[in-house]
Image 1 (cartoon, rainbow, N blue to C red):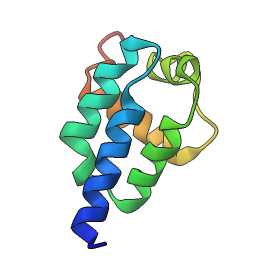
Image 2 (cartoon, rainbow, N blue to C red):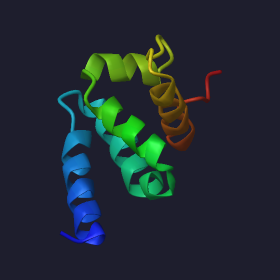
Image 3 (tube, rainbow, N blue to C red):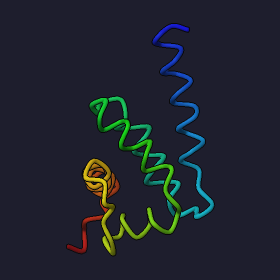
Length: 91
């Protein structure tokens, strides 16, 4: 499989992973994938993938600033998602 085909398959898989049971997460996660994912470093892309493996309530708590993930890479991605989706307005 070519690198382009592999990346396209990865994006499809991530797009599905961005669809959450807690629908309030669909927009920030899906929008970040669409608009920002390609510009991330490989390390940041892997951190985003790890983030998508977390439970919905954990992700929501991280995005609204109630808690922080222990994974430093995920902390950075959470901040990028918050900035992209303008979730930092109340701070």
